Image 1 (cartoon, rainbow, N blue to C red):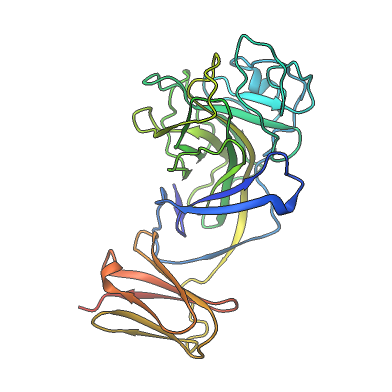
Image 2 (spheres, helix red, strand yellow):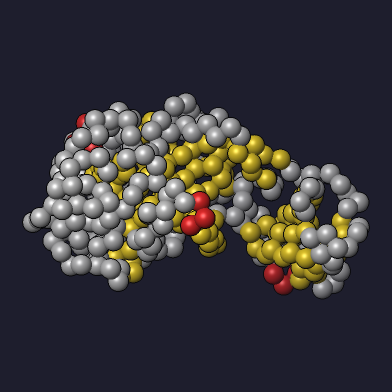
Length: 357
């Protein structure tokens, strides 16, 4: 398992498909999700990327033949890529911008006449290729697609990593779903079926991914507790546990049932960490408990700072921002103790606080 050291966020960094080169067309939203990982030690760690060393050998699905035209069968996905494979009998797909437009898998526009319906229209996040997987097909069939790749080197236990990928709902599909996630494992995981893999993803979207225009980033920053050396992407939930939303752009064409997603930009990157029970700048903020709650007062008012309260399980409970006094009532606490992190643009203080008896 991996240990999450900050609130699991469903980070939506969305890009207009025809504006990947236009920096000003990027919009960003963030939605909070409960974490699916654990915090075994009470710490808050500030994560910052190092020289973005991506341990995923081919996160943009470029290293392969790149000429496949059509609908892939059971072994075609792995046969057409150097670093990726399908760990089950499912049939993930590859889409290219550099194949003939009459190919079923041509993007962003295919002139394929049928009979199988086109999934949708999208430009890759990077390069000329992207993968495509079913997160949900027909009710109670529990059919899934998964894609899997070895990492360039195993994770180092105790080291923090940012893990994630981008997904975009194929335009013409019947539904959007939740449940897309990334599972890190020691060695391959596989099944001789096209059903749900019995694994728990360390990074997962618990909200429905409904955007069929832009790319959505699903990521988290985690601490490795084992030498994981493989990443698998897919929906690891059963049909019964998967939440669906109708897609308003659905066409009803043949084979556009269920929820199908384009996948690109997969990454596992080491990050630097700091701020464990930090004794730094103890006089910058005064922390004063009272019968009503916790009061944080800066030494010098007028400089913006934030206060975040984390529970024993590592989940963010409460977060406030201000320039003068900030109060956190005891009523928002979910356990007897928690971690309070205070920071401004240059300093940070993390301190374990327990409710008064």
